[in-house]
Length: 517
Image 1 (cartoon, rainbow, N blue to C red):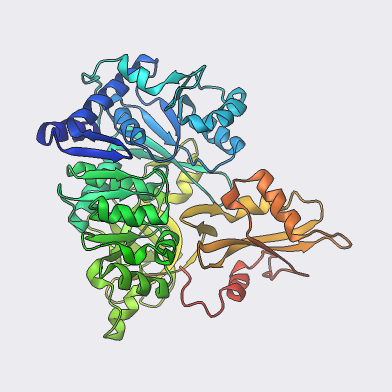
Image 2: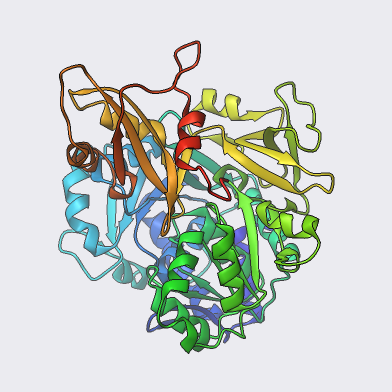
């Protein structure tokens, strides 16, 4: 089985059933297949050949799903781009991926024009609409090509996606995902979450994020309906839960916090929800209690990382126990146990399993694990060893196999569900002439769960303000990466080797917090 076959299978089995809903756009599985085939033929007609890369810059839309599956049928590779990045950051990723075709929403036309001279290999640009002078139009392109199957031989080991993720070096790394990677994880989650053709799932996490891709694939696999919102807006989500007859939805904790703060929360019926997933960043216990009170006993937690495609563990609905035996209640602070068909372990530096209560690194293996980082062999060797993915997350494990994450070895900040490299932000801060030393980390935030915090030491006799540091970062980085606050100190805590001890800094700012994942 390869992904393109799912399109044909659903069209045969559920030809008139609604496959995708996006605003006023509704497509049956038969209509979806025709659009996907037309796009696949158009991409091949533009001169792309098997395993060529195509980049997409867009907010959530039905075209995003069409592009994923058209690429799957044509044997091409999608490179989803974070639409919150700056032009230079996008150009770096597109060039590193060696993309030859660029699809974009028309509201990004100005950005595209500004970076076009830097995009060395891109030969074709396609606007997803409305039409933009000087660029190919998506709908016109579809109308020009046949709705017949493109007839490309695709195997399970062919690449389907390169998803870029922040790294400890500050440079994004392209996680190479194959057809078999995506299908293996899809089957795992269908089994674990009991997804069926009767489900209707809602997408509000951006499709460039793996946290949105896996629910899309799992529900499409089963012939369920995918409902798409362009972006997250609390009231629209709450209304869609009821009016869209949504049964499943995956969110990040900061989104759930905003739902709970909405005045619309008590005005809608959520009885149709089977489960409401959360992951990608920590969930404060108090927020979790409020969410269960508001939506009912329907919350479930997932843990993983992009390189795992993405999920490794699950704390299911029935194990979200708020009261009762202490051992059961404590599990709410865990990320659950390993998924079916995935081997997850917590090991010490020698590779031996840790004993309950001891801290080690989470490692995993399985058919969903990526094969490599694109064009980064050294990073690949450091991360994937003898078939095991080393997550960089430190955790303990109890006697029943529940995993409790205690720290991030890689110092990645997860703010509002977005991965942010602390090193990348530090590099920007060091560009200020008055800065002697800087350390960037996550601190608690009521809305984002984690916010970017900078702690700075200035050169003797030099001055700088919080506003200056933040403004500098805003010039060099995407807005969500900038520090939300800056503290100035005389010195930073350091070890014997001179390395800055971020653990000590975090202890200051996370003091009295019930949880730090």
